[in-house]
Structure formats: structure tokens, C-alpha cells
Amino acid sequence: MDVILPHRRRLLKNYKSLTLWFQLAADTIAISVSLVVLTLLKLQDVPDFYQLLAVIAVLCMWIVYPLQGVYRRSSAILSSVYRLGSAWLITLLMLVFIGFITKTSVHFSREVLLGWALVGGLWQALNLVLFSYFYKNYRHKFSTVVSSLVIGTGALSRKLVNDLNGNNWLPDKVIGHVLGSDEPLDDDQTASFVVPVLGRLEALRIIIKENDIRRVYVALPINESKVIEGISFDLLDMNVDVIWVPNIFALNLLNHSVREIGGIPLIFLNETPLISSKGSIFIKNLMDKLLALIALIVLSPLMLVIALLIKKSSRGPVFFKQARHGWDGKVIEVWKFRSMIVHSDDSVTQAVKDDLRVTDIGAFIRRTSIDEIPQFINVLQGQMSLVGPRPHAIAHNDYYSGKVDAYLGRHRIKPGITGLAQVSGYRGETDSIEKMVKRVELDLKYINSWSLLLDLKILIKTPLSLLSKDIY
Image 1 (cartoon, helix red, strand yellow):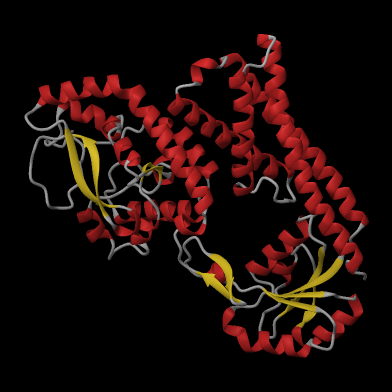
Image 2: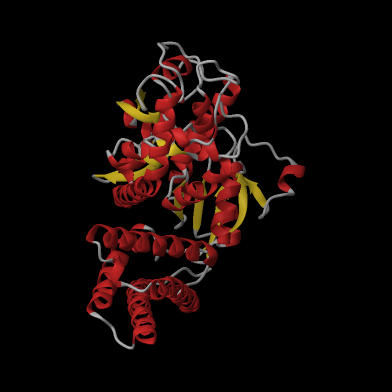
């Protein structure tokens, strides 16, 4: 079967580049024109402040959209719209922050801005759908299917088949599996495969010739490196692409990535997202500080009332600062409203139901998490994030680190005021190792799948998690 010819490949690459720039231009027009039109309808004029807003919005868009992968091609249009929506929301948050610190938000009509946020977003979504449609049709004219095989029948190979055949942007079409030499053939198992098993490794050359295969994916375990090397050597004269798919997912990884230095492929098995994605982290930090500042201003009356009630309830300071481990294990002092009587506690004892150390007002602010509000100060100091693994007391870390696998991996990202574990039902006391294991699993899942959109989801779910009755 034919593959993409060189001149077609060049045309496709050039068209893809042009599509990206045309879509960027179309989104720029959507953002600026929608703002101008809505302003004209409301004010019958476009004041200087609105013109400046359009320029700043476009500049922010040019920064945020590439970082969020808005123009990265995906087989699912909903996934692309999802990325676009999150990028547009981040752009709007940046504009709110700029308006807040420059004290210029009073010059704008809320009706115009809300309409612009909606119309501008819908216009960009329409651009995305149209460009995806035209690019897909153009691509079909300048590319043909590349018949492919996957050697292996494990979970990785089955996922690879699903991903390749389910992505319309890729030319690969997997037509079947090839069993490894020692892989068992189970009829019940193979009946659920998306593509059939065409034979065993010993008949690989015959299978390639009979099916006109142009590309072979080797998805065998890492411990079969000799077999993989033999396949590559044996197929040198077959004029096929041989691609090794290492099963790194079988390892206990933490935010892994693959890069290259001097032509040498490097697999990062354990890496903090704060290093691997600096652009997105810059936006995360900006969003953290903006929302933390707004929260402290809005909640300042409540904080004053709570402070007075704490002073009235018992002797001692209003705030309580506890040493905890932060990013990369560095010790930070976490701010909280004092909810207990002043006492000495060097043990691992967590608060429990009817704990005599907890004051009356302390029980209320602990149950509602109002005691955590001062941690917005830690966020402004850059020590914490709004979302991340909750920072445990140092004594707790010392206790659990030897009892829970990968426990200290939680420190590979900034701790948060709320987190995935907290909105998933693991908030409050962990009275068993099993509960702590589950909390750590969710923390590591957050680190591995971290994104700004996930942060927004957790922030939205957090108020509902405060309804839990198991907080003491």
C-alpha cells in the first residue's frame, strides 16, 4: 500500500503550518472584532481603554494558547474545544488580574465584558471546528494509509492499536497483532482485540509481505531487549519502519517525559512538573496569586470576625504557624487560624472526634475549613499553591514515609490549600494506613495528570467537599 510521497509530505507540512497561522489570525480577529462590536452596540463608540484591552487580550492569547496546546491536532474535536475553553478562561483571568493591579476595571462595562467573554469564546470555538474540518479534508487528499503491525498482545500493544486507529490525524492503520515467541495464544482474550492476531514472530517476514506492511511497532517488555534487537536486524532488508514502544508505564513513574540530548533519547522517570512545563507553571503561579489576593480581600471581614472569636475563646495567638514540608521537601511555615488551646504536641496525634484540645470556635472553623484561609498568605509568598497535595506535619511525614510507598513523592510539587484527594472524599483525619495510601495515590495521580484545567475543576468541587461531617 502506498505511503505519503515526499512532495505530498511537503504540501501537508506547509498546509499544516499555514493552518496554524490562519487559525491564530482568525482567533485574533474573533477576540478583537467581538469586543469592538459589543462596545459599539453599548456605547456607540470605542473608547481608548477598550482599544487597549483588545491589544492586551491578543498579546495574552498569543502567549497562553500555544502553551495550552490549543492548536495541537487531536482526533477528538471535543478535546480541542476543551483546551480552547481553558485557554480562553486563563486569558480572561490574566486580564482581570491586570485590571485589578492597574485599577482600570472601573472604566469598563460589565455587560460588554460578560458578552465579550461569551461571544468571543463561541466565535473561537466555531473557528476551531471549521479549521479542523478543512484541514482533515485537505489531509485526506495528500496522504494515504500506512499499513502497520504491532508486535505484542499486552495491555500496552492494545492501547497502542486503539490510539493509532482512533486518531484520524495519523496515517497509520494497524491491521493486526503479531505474537511474541513466548506469548500465549488465548482465544477468549484475542476475541476482544480490535484487530486480529495474524501469527507468531517466527512468521513475521511472511506476514509483512502478504499484507504489504510499511511500519512495524514493537511493543514487547523491556526484558526482551535481545528479541527487539533481533527484530530490528532481521527487518533491515524489508524496507519497513521499525518503531520500538518501550513499556515505561509498567514502572511507578512520577510525571515522566521523553526528551533528547545530543541525539541520545532520555526518559525522565521522576521529574517535577515545575521544571518540565515552565510556561504553564508561570500561568499557574499567576492564577494562584491573583485568586489568593482576591480571596484575602473579599474574606477580610470574615477573617476579622474569626480573629475576635478566637481571642475570646481562649488565651493565645490568633494565628498558628506549623512547620511542614513544601516543594522538594523544603520546610515551610504554614499559616492557620488557631483552633486548639495552646499546648505542646511533638507526636503524630491528629485531631479526632470530641478532641478536648479543640475549642468551640475551633471545631466550627475546622469543620468548615475556615481555619485554612490564612494559607492564602502562603500562596502569595510562593510557598504554596491553591491546588496541590495537602502539606502534612513533619512528624506525620516521618511516620508515614516508611509505611506508604512513594509517600514523599508528594513533595515534587507545591503543596496546596485543596487537592484531588480532598475533593475525592479523603479530607480530614486519616485514621488508618489504608486511608493514607489512598490519599497518596490520589496526590500522585494529580502530579502525573496535572493541568490548569484540572486545577479549575478541583477549585470548583472544593466547596462541596466542605460539607463532609468527618472533619474534627
